Amino acid sequence: EAQVTQNPRYLITVTGKKLTVTCSQNMNHEYMSWYRQDPGLGLRQIYYSMNVEVTDKGDVPEGYKVSRKEKRNFPLILESPSPNQTSLYFCASSSWGVGDTGELFFGEGSRLTVL
Amino acid sequence: SQQGEEDPQALSIQEGENATMNCSYKTSINNLQWYRQNSGRGLVHLILIRSNEREKHSGRLRVTLDTSKKSSSLLITASRAADTASYFCATDAWEGNKLVFGAGTILRVKS
Figure (cartoon, rainbow over the protein chains, first blue to last red):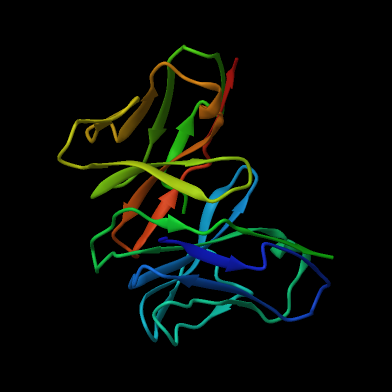
């Protein structure tokens, strides 16, 4: 079954404790992206990757890091989480090429609370 | 930068009625997409309309696009309780390979 898998689905952590949210897709997609969703603000892009070893900032990259060492995986790293990073996070992937956008496939989301 | 903005923010209708949601955007686009999100779940793609198309249908969904007004509408006909969800429009953006999402319309269909 084609899917995007995120882990963990739920996490409560404390300020400053590094954490990683994993994302894996089994559709051989080149494009992967991370979004955060906050009430009233819709989805905002954090980082995206056009292919292996190619990553770029989205609209709200501060406080986050990503890596793309393998095509299927695109982890989101919070080096020193803060309460304003409490949010619902989504990983998404697609078969986009440069300048060509189409359907995004989303994971089920990771709800993160930073105390 | 938020490109798409949906209207209304919330909509409550009876089962069997039609639901119409609107989306406005600011810059030129290649395509506009609509997504659905059940409470707290991942978004699911519904339909894509390209900038050179004016109307598209998929089952009970009808999407229109007016590039001169930079607006789109999503019509769900004969709504069902299971259509209760949030609906988002998303537009692509040339300055970065991404989809820009609006804040969404919350649709509640009462049975």
